[in-house]
Amino acid sequence: MKNKPSSAKEKTTEPAQAENARNLPAQERIQVPVPDASYQEQAQEDHVVRPVPEHLVWVEGGVFHMGNTLGEEDEKPIHEVRIRSFMIGKTEVTQKEYEALMRDNPSRFKGEALPVEQVTWYDAVEYCNKLSQKEGLTPVYTWREDQIRADAGANGYRLPTEAEWEYAARERKPDTAGGIYPEGEDLDSLAWYTENSDNKTHEVALKVPNSRGLYDMAGNVWEWCWDWYGGYETGTRALFPDPVRVTRGGSWNSKAQCLGSTYRHGGDPSKGYSDLGFRVLRSAF
Image (tube, rainbow, N blue to C red; front, side):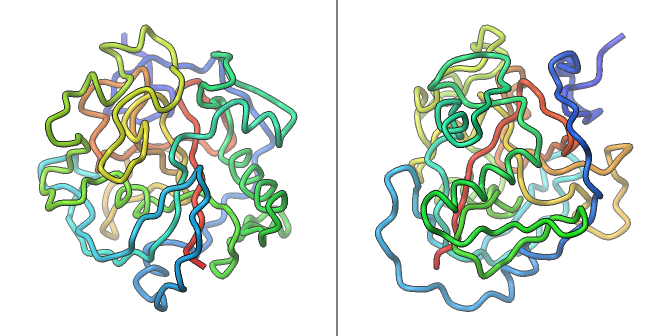
């Protein structure tokens, strides 16, 4: 009998990591409407570009067709989304970066240059706020009566929306198949996954970056996104029994089919998993 995957999606066959999950107090699951794809479609023009910090990569905004007609059912239908310009982490947040701010390292696989994992969605949100405060920026997230709200006008760090993540992961060329692979590169040169990971995470930025200069957008660890998971169309059957936050990108224990830029996954926001981390993003203010 196969185990459920670590972050609960029935359509994958990855081994469970329940023994490594941390159960933190769950906060009330309230969907907050900003920032998300609908907010981006109504967004104003971007501000003047300022110097981009070394640990971030500038992603010019635009309109793209999100989803994949050749993918899983939850990747359909393809729909048009407008994205504002943003800056996103060149790599997944490392254990060194996380521990410096949070004074904690929950990771199963220890190493300063390894991606932090076993962090809950709430941990990732808290990290974003602390990083904003450290750099003198306005925190994006606030807690009010156990509800997490996001200020779309704040210039601090936040988690990418699902649409922003997919936009950053895609190659800068027409892509109807939802592929994530740089032209001329094979999968082993791009990602840590079941075929080459030796059942563990690896240091960030060892593989080939995508055409935007982003490392490990495929494999190593799944990455938390802001959004609650749901179908792209109202009434689409959910693939999870309980509300979960979106995760993207695949991990060290993912099969190749999970590494595409349009592939969707999810995890309980109150739990941490040894195959799940995150990267940060800042809006273009």
